[in-house]
Length: 321
Image (cartoon, rainbow, N blue to C red; front, side, top):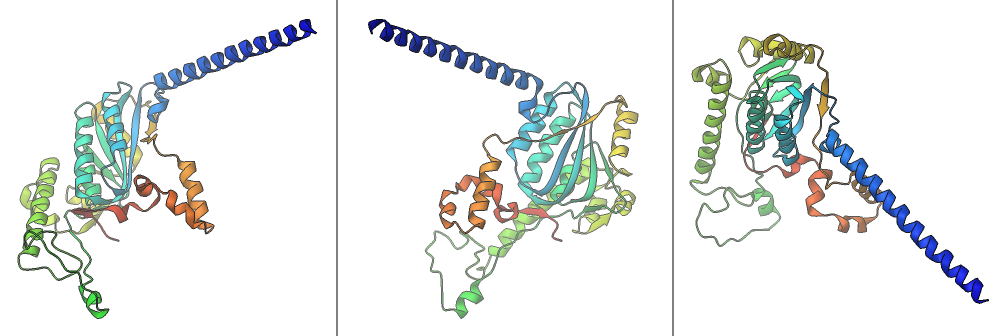
């Protein structure tokens, strides 16, 4: 009997040792795979194929996207990227978001040539970003322009008055938290906002003047908020050529000396903190009437699952369709 017990104990020790080495081998394999992916650039949103032209999509409502900004910084330092095509399809967004991306694109342009290829739309902050590139191409029917700034706020004072609700305030000065949606603006409040809008508008005009072959007087004529077709944009020097991505690449080849055989590869910003499958499952639970799922929402996740326009604040450079 003693021999049988010893045999059983020996077999258990052997199984534990085998399990240990199997786990260790698996960990080594995982580390090797991760190291390989990191070295290839796959963990940065793109698998390096060698020298190429990077395509960066700027679409939808613009805001200060740190993942996009980080990616542009990586592109700037990546020796395999020989040129960049910004594929723009945006009505604009926050002015500060446009400013941040504009500055990041200028940083890239300091290291390698950048061309913008406008798809359907590059308006307001979308055009601001296009102006950061060295060359702008748009389709004949593309919408370009809407140079300007807007500040919007709701006004519900009349509605509150009708339903007998008022908001009482005690504040340090008359212009604190003005304009307010709960009452008509006091004297001076609208003038303060107009000054803020004018300041940002003049900055936008100066930016276009600096980046385009136009005088400030010429830009002011175009910067009344209007939009232009691609054809009219070319006439007014807001863009440099009519066409699509092939025309944009041709400029990189003909004017900047890039190899015509270089492939165009998509670069996409990656947010490792967001679990898309979890968010998708959360939406499904809410759609099925599981109200308790709402309590599981993390406030930091809201911009990922709710339209970004609902989170815009401050000054806007956006074209409203």
